[in-house]
Image 1 (cartoon, rainbow, N blue to C red):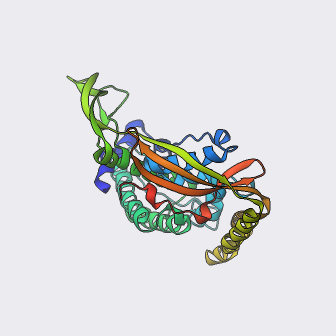
Image 2: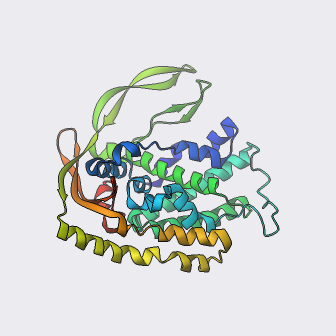
Image 3: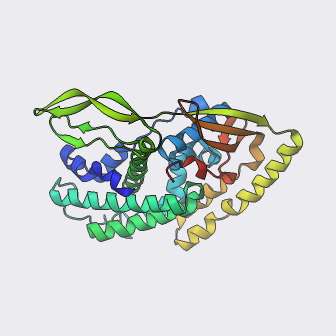
Length: 349
C-alpha cells in the first residue's frame, strides 16, 4: 500500500520552490470545506461527512462536520492544538531561547530533501498502519500515537528536538492527502518550467477495484515540452445520497441526549488528567482542560435525526451504506462522532 505515495517526493518539491516542510506539506494538503452551506441541513451535513470519508479515506477532515468541531465555538484546528498538539510544541527552552534546528533546515540542499522525504515516507507508513489498526473513529488514540511517532522520527532524522504547530499539521495533513492519493490515484504534475515532472501519474486502489478503461486527456512532457496527450485510464465515480432521514420523537430524543451525556462525560473530564500527565501549567493547562470540557454539548441539543447515506457507482451499484445520527445545536447540525463506525466506508480494506 505505502509504495503508492512515493511517486511524489516532498523533499524534491520543497527544494524546487525553495521552502521548507512545514509550509509545503500544509499547502499540498489544503482542503476547502463549505461548512456554512452544509451546517443548516441534517441531510447535507451527513452527506458531506460520508463523502469526505469515502472519496479519499479522509476521516480526519470529515470531523469538521461532527460535534468535535462545535466545541463551544472552538474551531476544529484550535481544539486539536489545545487538546493534543500543545504537549509536543518545542520551539523554545525554559529560558526563552530558540531550540536549535538541524543545520540543513531551510538550505534547499540535497541533505534537506533527503530528510524531508525520510520523515514524510516513514510517517506515511505509520499513518496507514494506524488507519488499519486504530481508525479515525478513535481519533484520540490515532492522533496521540501519530504525533508521538513524529517527534521520535524527527529527532532520528534531523538530530534535533524542534517541533511546532506548522510542522505537525504539515506532516499529518500531507500524509492524510497521500493516503487519499493511494485510493484515488494521482495526475501527472509538471513544474512551472514546463519540462520537469514533479509527480508521475499513478493508478489508485479505487481505480483498480471499480474503474473502467476510458480515453482521457492529460498533460505530459513530449520532446522536452509540456503537451496534451490522450491516455487510457481506469475511471470510476462515487455518488453519495441520503436515503433515510428520521427525526427522533420527543421520548427518543430525551433518551438519546441521556446516552450522549454518558458517552461524552468521561472524555470531557479527561483534560485535567492529560494536562497533569504532560506537566502542563498556566494557560496551556487551562486551554487543554477547557478544550475537553467543551465537548459536552448535551444541554444544547435541540433535535436529533437518524440518517442512512448510500454510496454508489455511476451504474447504480451500491458499494457502501453508512448509518449515523445528526444532532442539532440550535439551528446548526453536526454528525455525532461519539457513536459511529465508519469502517464500511474504507472500501480498499
